[in-house]
Image 1: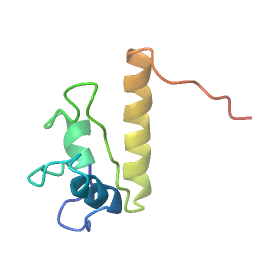
Image 2: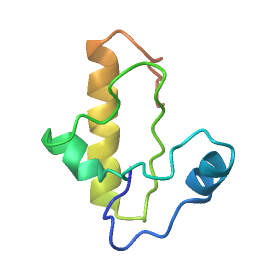
Image 3: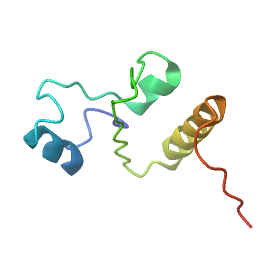
Image 4: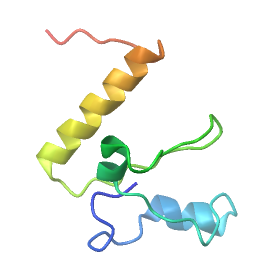
Length: 84
């Protein structure tokens, strides 16, 4: 997933995964905002993986973290960490 498709260079993780045949060459990058807004489903099954390529825009990083934490809680996944 990308913040904004037109600004983001191909992530090294995606390039490597394509080279290994793990990601199809025609796989479309999805912007994180599309997933958060509900206009793109993101992962559609448990074997798919998400690569979040952050470009350092704090508001998008926080929105992504909030979305992920809420989704994890809804599905009883993850570990809650105390921040003291």
